Amino acid sequence: MTAHHPILVTGAHRSGTTWAGKMLCAGNEAFYVFEPFDVAKDAGLEGPRWMPRDLPYMFYHIPENSSSEYEPALRRTVELRYPLLPNLARIRTPRHCGRLCKDWLFSHHARLTGKRPLLKDPIALFSVEWLARTFDMKVVVMIRHPAGFASSIKRLNWHFNFENFIGQEALMDGLLAPYKDQIFEYARHPRDIIDQAILVWNAMYSVVRRYQETHPDWFFVTHERLSADPLAEFKPVYDYCGLTWNASAETVIAAHTRGGNPRDVAPENYRAIKRDSQAAAEAWKRRLEENEVERILEGTREVASHFYSQEEFDAR
Image (cartoon, rainbow, N blue to C red):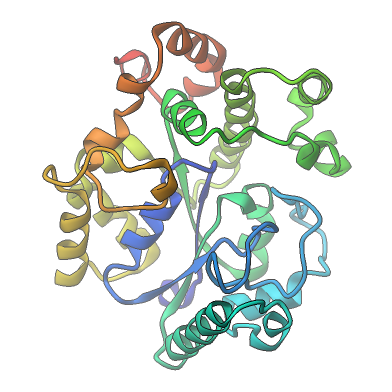
């Protein structure tokens, strides 16, 4: 039954997965699990670290029909059994200790009270099929306009390490095969951050397009659509996930998206979710140079045409 399915919210990084995941927890029926696939996260400081040992790469790929040595740890994650003891070995300060204990208490309480796990993880994008099959998940995939994605990447100065792709032979020969040569070229001869963003967006959303064709039972939604009318557009996502659309959900979502909220936040607060959602979705129109917008639109038009009408794509 839907009520027992774990939920996965994914998409490219900087596509609104944090915001969407937290808004789906606003009705108090789901427990937010932050990025279990993140190999760079500092346990006890940047949020709960659910995997007791590191995955070998960011954007790690577990093929759909394979077994995985990481299945036991991910099963414990889906069961909200926080690995307190393995994380204790990582403690360096009293602050770490306090955060770890709080994380364990919150997850323990969520499990005892029957909350459903909601895994928010863009870094799991290439393992979604395996996760969905193994744990019978409801999958929500966020899509963001490539200019919005590139603008966010540029503002945070998040250069991409293509070795995370190149080191995974099955990923490069499978899901990313159409971009294999270009990925190797960018790794050998680094490009500016706009070109990096174009390639990463194309690579990730060509995979999302494949998912869209092969998994009609998943929920695909654009960041812009949710941002334009959050109360109307989040309700179908709640319905798909089997979550109750209640007064708490409506109140929290309205408070975190209304027009009176800040349009922008400082880069160091990039995970802040209380924003004017419509203004935030259109922030790239204020931040990018005209020549950057032209490069992005020209470089992503083919893949983007599967998600946006020409009018939506070219709107400035």
